[in-house]
Image (tube, rainbow, N blue to C red; front, side, top):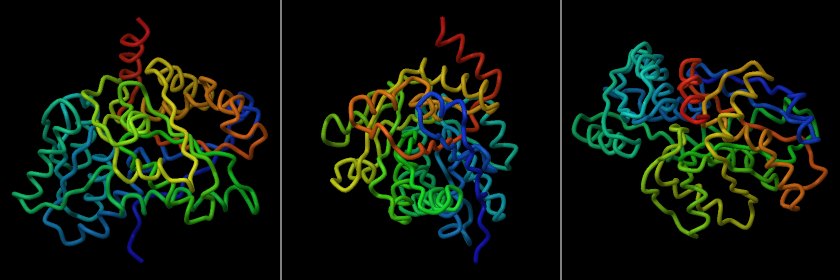
Length: 322
């Protein structure tokens, strides 16, 4: 068995969140992963499969995928090059350097950085590590759901799963995991911020769409186009995927409330999921009959994030609350 790079993460009951929704809320604490987010599950798995004897890995990421790729590469003794857009906070660039990666800043948004990464993979013979659109990633991410039944105990099934969506890699992994444990009837609430809402836009249009720009401060949700697999799942009659949007202000309110109540700091991308509880979306969906009124425990994927610290939080407050 090859070494795995991710940890089994805690499943914690949140008393405060449970009070808000009237059912038990469990937090899957992916923020506790060594690279700061869930990404190490899929990216670690992909690197194990594809980069064992590589001359180097290359990843385009405004943060968490890059952190995971750099961590996995360092563990494997393989050089890592991370291409990030100019919207990436200096704190992330520094952390990538600290993880031993070579960092290059290219373009304004993730899509620009990704174009460059694909080009370099080709010209320099490097192993390309996709941040969200690859079956091996989804296979790796599925492990987070595989850990849940043992924590919940026999015959307990979640009433719903709440997840943030950027490009859709986590969503695809969660769905893969639900399939693996036989929970495909569990509804999924897919959360995005306005201005980074490529999945919601695709569902509304009935086809994949490309956003003109990423205007949300949740930069780690910032793919302009969702992955095809995520969209295909949204069209499947076997799954219930409810796509909801929150504002940047609601995501910020969520991360501040989470910091106060749970004593954990997560980034805006994760705040989108937390806002499903803090901004009353779960209760509204129950009132609308789109989620059952008396449902089993709510499983909240706390995807984490390495692009946040107190200084960054203060900057966000100034930007969004003025």
